[in-house]
Length: 230
Image (cartoon, rainbow, N blue to C red; front, top):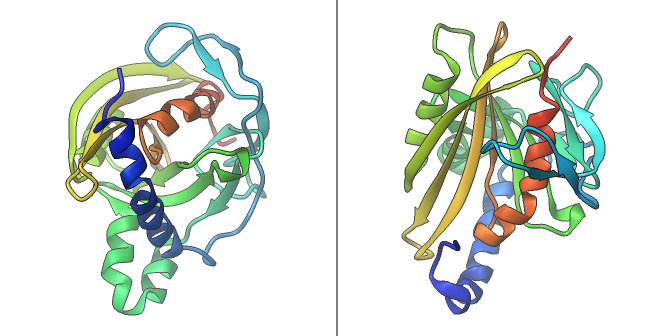
């Protein structure tokens, strides 16, 4: 099933979507550090998100460990050609000037703050796999994930489930977001795990549902290789 207003509507709104994406990404450009990663010929995967076979992107690198582009409480593989950059939300907000409030809203969602952005453009796709982290606490992965989704404007139809990977037990969600400005609905996917350093959320969006589905192998690669940072 495809979500949205049809191909004609998608083409009509594509330029505006790209503009909005550029504006939001521009808020943190220059405040991140670079790295490389992801997406080539996919291979069959085991342990798909929905319990069925899924495709996993070819590995390009990894993030999370000390010395990687994004040092995180978890590590995972990134797809070939995708490019990871660390995000310093405090620095980005401070540098935002009159746009500090907008930057803060973009970088913080529910109980977590953006810490890493992995860009699909070098692999020929339009979207990001973003990593969000939070402070240690008593909330479990499902509670963290629900807080994240609830805080996203236009989110609906959330379907939650649990999963296990690399000794971690977490929660995963599929949902849709509806943009009143673009008059379009698109798929989203995210997962959350808790660690001793705090919760971690991985979120895959995309410019539209077609782009989202094209990037799912990169998400599956990250999910299947997720491990606590040693």
